[in-house]
Image (cartoon, rainbow, N blue to C red; front, side, top):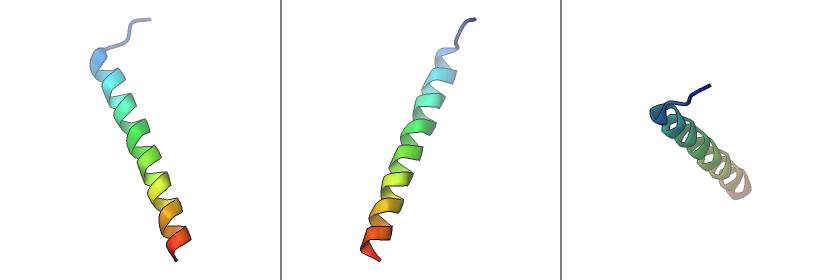
Length: 32
């Protein structure tokens, strides 16, 4: 099973944006 470097980059990007989104959600919930 070989991984395409572009797929890995995309996966990291999506995980990173998901983490950022969840932390932003937490902050907005705390702020409200």
